[in-house]
Amino acid sequence: MASAIINSVAIVECLEASVEDFESIWELIQEYGDQTDRWVSKEGLKFAAFKEKSFEYIIAKYNGKVVGIASLYYLHYYWYGKSMCIDEIITFKSHLFTDEDVVTLLLQKAMEILLKRNCHTLCLILLESDLSQFTKLGGEVEIGFKILRISKIAINQFAKEKSELNKHYLIRAGVKEDIPSLLYLIQCSAVFQGEPLLLDANEKMISEDTFDKKQIGAIVIEADAIASVESDKDK
Image (cartoon, rainbow, N blue to C red; front, top):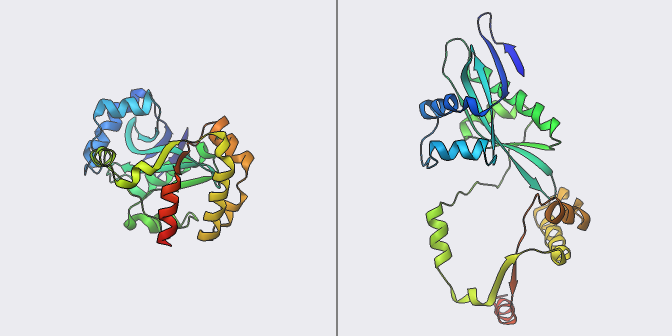
């Protein structure tokens, strides 16, 4: 547990949330969280965090009251390794402490967990208005990348639509025999993007992360001869 005296009055402690904290977490989300396009139900969120464990919460408490939350989840990259991501930080408004005080404590706790779980990077998904607060930590803003969220409705619609080209392609789960092709595409991407870290990928790394530890999934698209010929014509 991390704690700090924010001023002469307020002592805020930071810890990993348990299922008993969920009611307080939900109240904070409802009062201060962004409700735009929020479709997850209360029970769905509780199940995802404490049963399915697809993500987890760390919380800041003052006098036993939850005054800040951050949701954590993990991504695995061929070139960065395991990365902790923080997608949502919500804080209680109080005259005893500032939002920045509570956010700093939450980040300190997140970094403590990050090191304990052998993560290599911390990724923050932020509003542009909040960038200056977090770049002071030494982070770099990713240039040229945007987060694209596709709704379930749009996904279902996409799945129903069949183009003429679809019949020439096979989409399947990757297998170990695809490793050389996966590595080749990663290396091509490294050259195209000018990303030297991608060049560190190797067949052993892909095999372990994708097929042994199953930290990453691979979806492969194969083209038949007709699609290949049509592609050559377009060049």
